[in-house]
Image 1 (cartoon, one colour):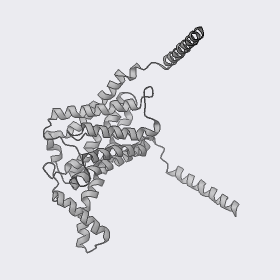
Image 2 (spheres, one colour):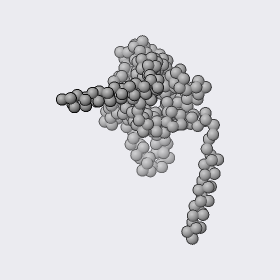
Image 3 (tube, helix red, strand yellow):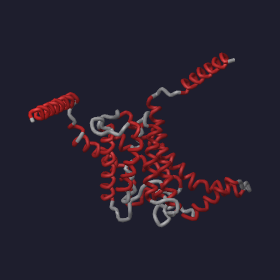
Image 4 (cartoon, one colour):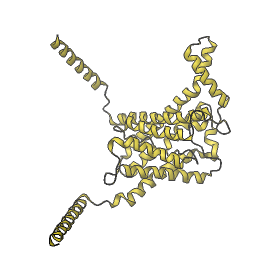
Length: 334
């Protein structure tokens, strides 16, 4: 009986291996694209979901720090999802900067950008369905008389949504909800000020990312990379987020903005903020290249070659040994 069980188990394992091999994708572009799309989706669902909860809860279910934590932890989870496959850029500004400085081949840029756009768009649709789209479903269920426990719970939640915005999907105003999905400038912020804000925020992001990955400096430990990058995004949100929502990511902004344009908010998502929509696309792209370039120019390019480093270490050891010998001799003389 024991031999039969072992034999049966071996057959099952071989069958499982065959199934896995038959399903496994071998095309690198497809594998990278799917991983990048999924990790971007995960990051955006947590990020946009945190905004939706804070806005619709009117302060009862979180505050601005909740949004910072939502995006920071969402980035960390996204890196765990796709980091070993695509690198989990989740940000077109990151991908563009990597291509600019030779860390990613240019032919991969369209794959990354499209995957990030798709992931962001789908995440916006998911959050919309969870926080808004359910109300339509609830009303249909109630009209047909099918009132189950889940429907009742959804109805209670949907009533809270309608209590907040009255069913009016607006871009500006006291009850505006478009800001749940895309970023918009503060009323006092000019286009130029917002442009500088996005360039600087993204530059800080890429500067720190370059440092965290610099193996000749103080890189993040391999197992700590997701958490450290998440803390970095959290830090940017805490310090540089109030002006315009710290998009610092073209695909994070334009994907959900396109979704809101077709989901009921209309063309106002492109008109609001004096035509703000292009700033989170162009400014982060420039800022990412500048931030990464500053780190390379001021730090990375000046690392000594490996053999020079080894020679310096050996020389230091020789000098230390010589000093120790002198100290011993002095002690003996005394």
